[in-house]
Structures are given as C-alpha cells and as structure tokens.
Image (cartoon, rainbow, N blue to C red; front, side, top):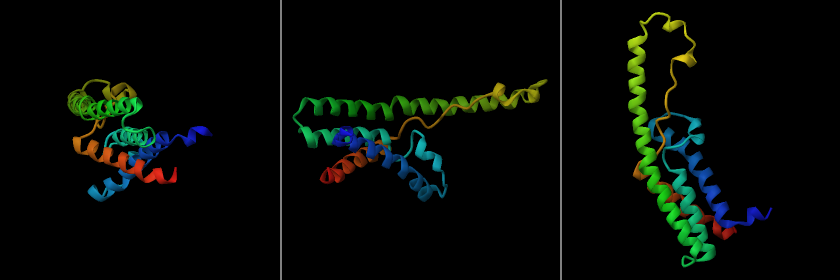
Length: 157
C-alpha cells in the first residue's frame, strides 16, 4: 500500500489515464467521430507519454526539489521520451501509411489472380498500425497535461 503514497508515481499514472481518456471527447469535438478505442491506443491528442513523463518529473521536482539528482535524471528521461514521440515513432507511423498503401495497391493488382479469393483472410495481409507517434503540438499539450495534473494532485497528497 505504500506504493500509493509515492506522489510522483501517482501523478504519472493519473496523467496517463487522463490523457488516454480525454482523447475520446477531443476526437468527438474535432471530427464528430466517437471512437472509444482511442483510450487504449497510442498516438493522438494529447500525448499520454508526454503527460506521464512530465507529471513524473514535476512530481519529483515538487517532492525532491529541482536541484536533486533524481530530478535531473527524470528531466533528461522526459526530454528523450518526448523527442522520440515526435521523431522516430512519428516517422515509423508515416512509413506505415506508405506501406499500407503499397499493400492495398498490390492487393488490388492480385485480386484477379487465380485462387486469391479462396485464401483465408489472415493469409492475405495485415495492415500496420499507422498512428505510432505524435505531432509536436500533441507532445506540447501532453506535457502541459502532465505538469498541470502533478500540481493539481499535490495538495491532496
């Protein structure tokens, strides 16, 4: 039960849950599309990765102080995580879009091939996940979410 007394951990987990859940109403407001599965997927606004690491770092800063070594480690970890979310993971998602297009084009090409339609669906293809990373604005709002949640929760700690 002492684990629940760890404020930085509580702030980070709360930020993840909040950021994941709030993606559903944001999508509904922006595109009129109700998609509850967004609460369990990566990518989207706001970045739950950014919310988590900034809430963790902010929580550590509040509890341990911004001059502590653990704050420095967490801060660097946060920067690397957010850079990765906007860089490597986002570009992997963009490549998935192109690969899925190639697969669809190839599928169309061979639809006329003998016996193709008789094959089981799993033998034909599987689309790659395209929303892996985040746009910089999603990371920015994810970090604001994390910092805000840490400061909002601390008085209750």
